[in-house]
Length: 138
Image 1 (cartoon, rainbow, N blue to C red):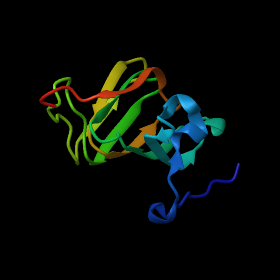
Image 2 (image 1 turned 45 degrees about the vertical axis):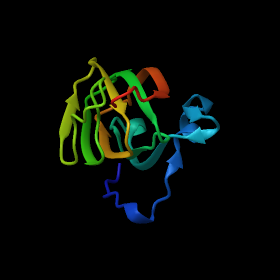
Image 3 (image 1 turned 30 degrees about the vertical axis):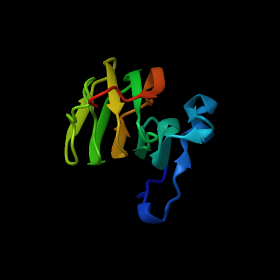
């Protein structure tokens, strides 16, 4: 096997709508709310996946995701951030999260958020995805 570096000009890469990769379940009123730039996918070589993910909730809405880490998942928040259940922001640009393999975890996103996500192997198994109204005070 020949090894070589993988290089991407991320500013020139298009955002891939999440529905293209994962189906219409990611559409909200016909619109995508998750977009990806796949930097590398080496799962067929025993590696993992590196991607930039953009969450774009519609105005007045928030994205709620629950998942189980199928491999170690590293998340570095570039823009925006995650909320707690009350609408208070708890993750900010520059924050890093590690979800070890097997860990159930969740994210609530009420603002556009961009993160570098690196999976050591397989990507998360999503157990719940929904877009809901932000509650009063969110």
